[in-house]
Image 1 (cartoon, rainbow, N blue to C red):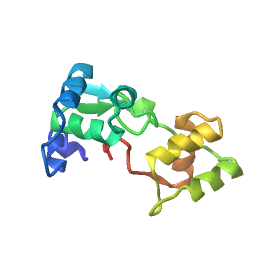
Image 2: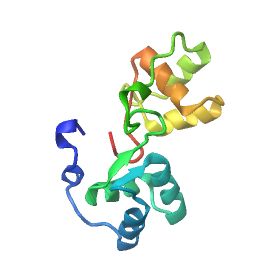
Image 3: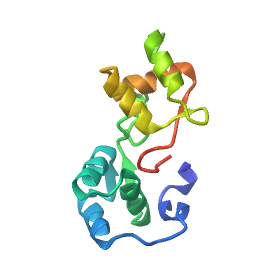
Image 4: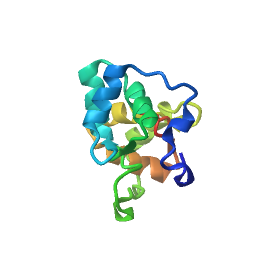
Length: 143
């Protein structure tokens, strides 16, 4: 979603149906009409709904998703932008290349690769920047 569309998150969904219990939980978890990536994932875990469903409900409620755990959006200031890694390790390059779907690395695959290689999630983003790999889709549906 581009900056021009900011604040019209519901427009990217064709329907407005969502479970009331989840709508209530997402609304309660939001602060200043924002919901962080980590809170959204925790909410998904606690409620048994998927991360995608939590993200969709946040969109329908016009709640802005922030604080991407990969560092891709909602960090606040531009100074926090993830810089490209200089030379990613060969095993990381191979793992990222093997994880591509339609020439992109899914967010979930990025998380799993970080866990498998004992790296920070932002290390994966830095390597992707160096390798010119786009991370998409987001588990929450933000991108």
